[in-house]
Length: 233
Image (cartoon, rainbow, N blue to C red; front, side, top):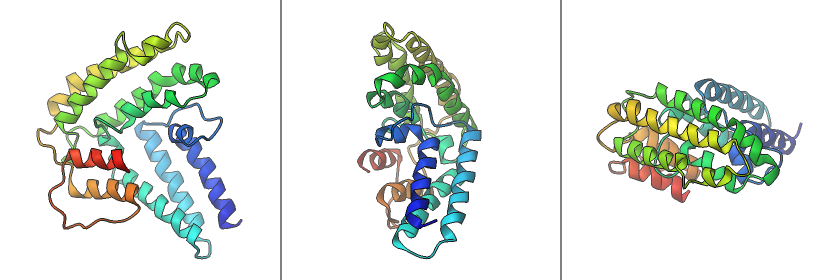
């Protein structure tokens, strides 16, 4: 198999693992959800490691090196269990689950709404594994997440406007309400009071968006910087 064909196969597998991103990228036929659960993250790591082995077996080329750089960044993030603390005010699964409906083709909306509660429950279980971590979610970000989840659960949310046509939208609102309750009652009391996310986690996130390693001697980095990285890149 050529590197080009191998890369095409990787994109297909990526779209299966990351249907939200695939929808935003315009890949047709992807109306499911990323598996945000701990099991889903572990499975994605195994599959990406298998892809690394396949590309490493190929002769050196630009396409091979680009694919390996991307795959290794993904594996590094998953191995460090970054998804367990992936909650912020701008670009985390909390936002992407709602935002993807802006790009979801009309025939796929109902199917996505039907399974949204399971997607958010998987996300909640992964955040559960990050409780008490030294680089855990800052309280400020948790509060922002609670407020956003409450909006999605409320009577003026996008899901409320969808209920007349899609009854499953009621379940989506309820799922966001349940997540807001858990964030407020369980995660917030244990959240970090400072904003620091840790240099290693910041550098991993920055590299994934920049495609380059930034200076490790830079000054103290906080959760606002991490969110800016997600927003800009």
